[in-house]
Length: 126
Image (cartoon, rainbow, N blue to C red; front, side):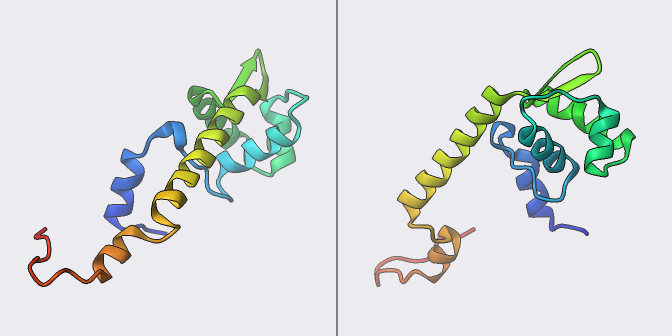
């Protein structure tokens, strides 16, 4: 499914430290599986069998997730990096709390578009 260019630009410029892996993606599925089995480490073949993701896709996704620090591996075994996962979760929760505190959970842009200006002010020019 295609996405609008502004959404693409937003994704491209996001802070990877706060990247959120959408449900249904290979990254999300693998992270969820490894987080659920955090006391174990698995070879890619077993991760593929347990998650239903093709083995070739599992290997590529594991490598990308390891580059972000969310996964660790030794030899052929992969495991969730619990400390990094906890740090990312805390950062995400903190950012959500800041947004809610500052903006009351409202869509800032929609609110700005609907705001009434004082009689002596003109709308911003884009």
